[in-house]
Image (cartoon, rainbow, N blue to C red; front, side, top):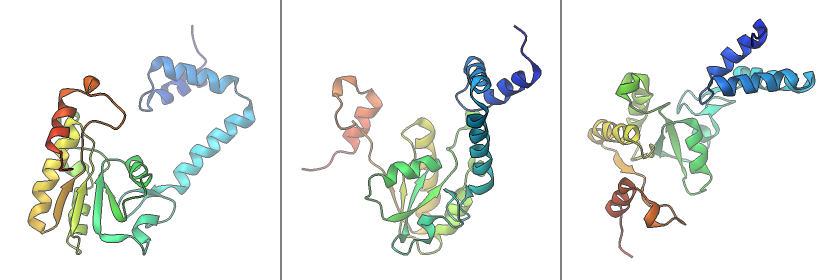
Length: 197
């Protein structure tokens, strides 16, 4: 079936989104086509608002409507403790615990030589600059993946000589799961991170 040019263009643009393949893009495009115009206008307006009003914090690279972000400008946050995460959405995950009282630094990814992502592609230089301003601890909260582990090891080598304490979030078997279903790496990390009770 030959699609009209505007619909074909929409399919092509939707395919550029992460996790959207050709079939998914076509499904979304047809959904937009049959959606009432008012709903489509709200979607277009929401996308435009994000591009016009949301940016990245000049200090930590988190997403924000105001610069610096709410965490960097909060007087009740410990500016001497930085939690390093890969992506802005990771900040929300840590904030949901209501336990962390320091500030954040978003790397905007993880080292991945196979995907062509090296140290210069991440927000590492700005992190090192921040550490020079009296930071006492850097918590590495990168994902428990090969890329996340490589990034944590790389950052540790850069940060330790600067005098800040470097810690890594604990990893292991999640609460509510069975050991029987955990993979070997997860069990290994759980054993490495064991503590006295």
